[in-house]
View 1 (cartoon, rainbow, N blue to C red):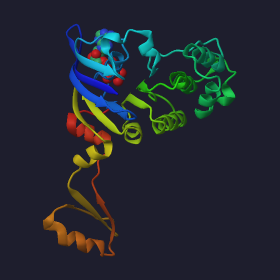
View 2 (cartoon, rainbow, N blue to C red):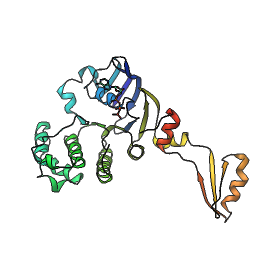
View 3 (cartoon, rainbow, N blue to C red):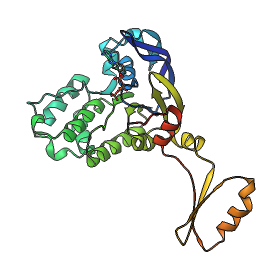
View 4 (spheres, rainbow, N blue to C red):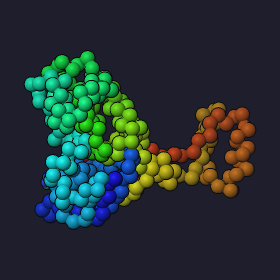
Length: 279
Ligand SMILES: Nc1ncnc2c1ncn2[C@@H]1O[C@H](COP(=O)(O)OP(=O)(O)OP(=O)(O)O)[C@@H](O)[C@H]1O
């Protein structure tokens, strides 16, 4: 659904993207993970036609980047970015009705999407009276009501409270179930682990690693086993032939209360690969 080859973007002397490659399959949720300034938003803006590439190729749903300026291209996408906005003086429902008519979507979708993000009771409120988290949920409704095949979400939950984040995650999981192709950017490793089938680690405009979160966690795990004893003592041994007998004995040793392998979080893997924290 999304093909990106040797994509480059420069701002003056700043090489924001130094030639990145990735593919996103139909129905896949793909996460671009990276710290601030790594090039995540630039990538999304190139894919949605807001920026023009300085090199490389992009194709989204069969459309090449030279056609991204066409209204027909953007209308078939679902976009949630820092540029997404609502009419503050209109109610939630009137805002969504406006976009529904623009997209020619069926009337019932407005209530359906509001219900999904838990905002059915707020539909007659003016947008100017909503909290930040509520606005973000309405923006997500706006991005999905025409049931786009591809969605680009730039940090969909950044700086939101846990309840709003959970609601947004539930909605994204529903979209994933329905087979929507989603590309999102995030600093949040839990979000990426929960939602993404595959992630790419972006660091200083370069993709350093790509893969399924669990596969990457497995690939970068330390080959160690921690044995915790009932007196609180912890013994760490290599998970190898040499310690085979000891580990087998530990399984049946009543004084061993916990046996644990090191399974790093995605954030720890990111640090291992790039030397940088994901925040
Ligand atoms: N419009 C622009 N003009 C000049 N430089 C830009 C512009 N947009 C991005 N950059 C630069 O490109 C680099 C990548 O920025 P980008 O916004 O893509 O990072 P990001 O990973 O999305 O960061 P954040 O997580 O803080 O949003 C940064 O060094 C940034 O200063």
